Amino acid sequence: MSQMPRLSACPSCEEPLESGDRFCGACGYDLSAVPARPKGDPTVAPNGSVPAPAAECPAPAAPPVGAGGLTLPPQPSPPPQPPLPPQPPRAPASESPAVPEAAASGVRFDRPAEPDEYLLQAPDPRVAADLAAPAAGARVCVACRAGRVDGDGYCEHCGHAQPRERDHLEQESGPVAAVSDRGLRHHRNEDAFAVGHTVLPDGSPAAVAVVCDGVSSATRPDDASLAASRAASATLLAALPRGAHPQQAMHDAIVAAARAVDALADEPATARERAPHQNAPACTLVGAVVTSGLLVVGWVGDSRAYWIPVDRSAPPARLTEDDSWAAQMVAAGLMSEAEAYADERAHAITGWLGADAYELEPHTASFKPDRPGVVVVCTDGLWNYAEAAEEMAGVVPLDAAVRPLHSARVLVGHALDGGGHDNVTVAVLPFPAPPQGAGSA
Image 1 (spheres, rainbow, N blue to C red):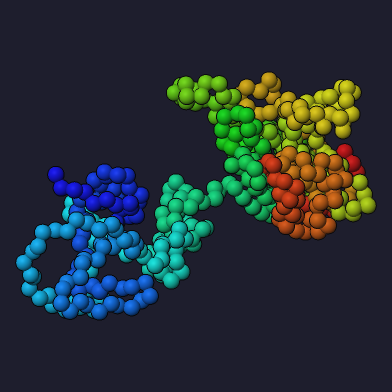
Image 2: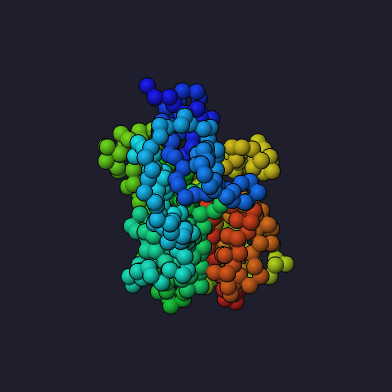
């Protein structure tokens, strides 16, 4: 059995070795075949000088040098060998072919050269021009601005998830405008709105806004709010031109919205089996109709409507009463408003649209303001940060009557600046100066 060279570290990776190791435990180097130092490679002294070759007798072989310049202990001298033929001079380093370090076992230790640059997740602007341009009408990634968005909402180039369509929505319709935002804490927007305008039989204009807030503890709250807002708005816009009274039209619109949400509970049995303990889809609703001399609001739940006069010296007012635990405590005289809304049960709703609602009780009210102003229709994602009518009036811009979309954006921004803990949706409806002689309803 041949004697193993005594090595303190692997010649390839410099991993410390144990006595008697035949292979390196880190890289697998065959320690029984330590390569001999090639001829023609002069030994360099520590001071950088090259010693002159011996003239008469050959010098003993220098100890082999391992990877990283590690000097190995001397090996037993091999038996004398016949002289080798003269070797051609070594080519300069720039001309010699690359020879991988290899052990006798055939394991290669050479590695391909590392690239100087790596492809970033977002495309390098120097090569972005090489990407295929998205087809006309295709969505472009908001992150890399070059890749096409697939059907699942992800960029095909960088993989970035795209914002959902309902994360932020804005819409204008005649004199009314609305904005909805997901907020800063929720992973999706469960609010929805619908705005529109039409003409009454006498030729006067009418504006409509409906805002709904999905109940997060229920199944598919985003679907519920969307179905309710669309059904209520469609009912209003169909009834008003036919001459229906706005307050009756609002009542019918809430009933239609409730039916639309109830229909969402008719799921296949397999869906119920997957989630047997979930509540039926549910949402709250608040709507407003503005005509030349009449303001009508309707609601179920805790979404609200506020009246803000153009003349801020006149008092603002809240036009709705919440279907909530806090409102019930205040109405019963059991707690003050401040105490009730400070309670952790304050926002527990007692009325909503959905198949498992106790009883549908649409609330409607009509007003005849004696001065111009705006109606703010919103979810609790806004009024949590401006609860009292005076607080809301302090946030609504002074030019809200002429810039409703801008005002809706400002109100959403106020909620986001306050923390954005919930989805935020707000619609702004200007109320024109009433005709002479109009009074309050």
